Image (cartoon, rainbow, N blue to C red; front, side, top):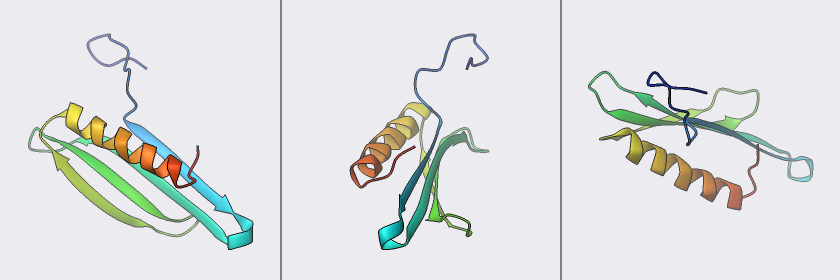
Length: 86
């Protein structure tokens, strides 16, 4: 994918993860996206819950896109360690 300046994006701006374990009756999702807010900053929007149900949403505000992407990458590593996958 290319941004407006023609450079390819190296880091993801959206990650969707699932954790499904029938033996525990577990069907969860975790979605993270980096978006620009109305005030020129960037937000990491986190959504999570049971697959097929409305989930919870948390918005973390960051000064710049780099900080928001760093937070997204750090959180995704934590989720992978806890058993979530693509």
